[in-house]
Length: 281
Image (cartoon, rainbow, N blue to C red; front, side):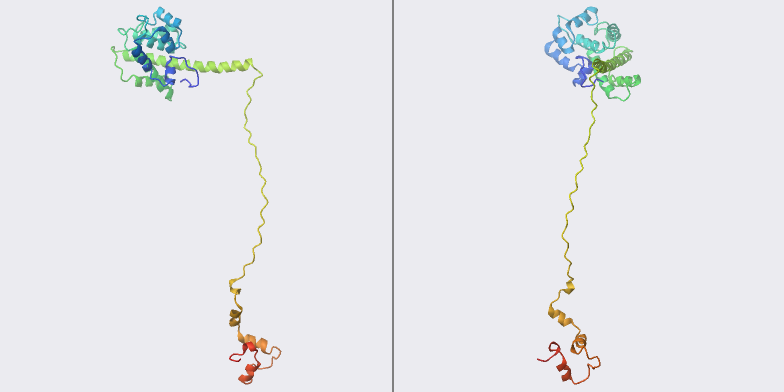
């Protein structure tokens, strides 16, 4: 369906959907408050020229207003014609409406109120825009779902409404495609008329910045750890010495023939250094 950014003709089914309105509900509120709209008010609602509406009335496609006031039956038919006129000839739209509700929408001849038909059209357009299958079968499935609660006065009422709505939906879709095509063609024509004006191709350039790595920080050399076992006091070291080995080295290192065990105990003690003389003063 129509893109929200594109300009939509006021009064078309797609325009009401884009504005979030529920079909004929907004206009019904106006009619209830005013008892009927003047020609200028109808023009404001539909976006049509007054001369266009008067021409449709003159040709018999829209019923004559009552005391110059346009009521529900008039405005609903005007909205439907306006929604289809870009894709279907006006004469064919008149025949399509006559197929449903007679030449001018007279409630005595028709099978459905045209405001209700317009509501069906808006609902179906919204669902078709969200559906994955937009083929004829897919559109007809949507239409059947929309009119499931409808019951008409004639045996073929449901068939007529289904056929008419399917045609209307495809007409609205074609109108949307037509507008998109025209917008794209206008851009191409503008480019042809302005050959020197070329839209520059935007290329994003990402500049790579190489950061210099800072020089490594020289850490001070680690001091060698002193083994815990070597941290002893002098008195501890003295107590752990092997006295026998000390005697051999210190007492008489040059006399290898002397027997350290010979002589009296007094001699042995006398010959020891002062720091090895046990029990002596």
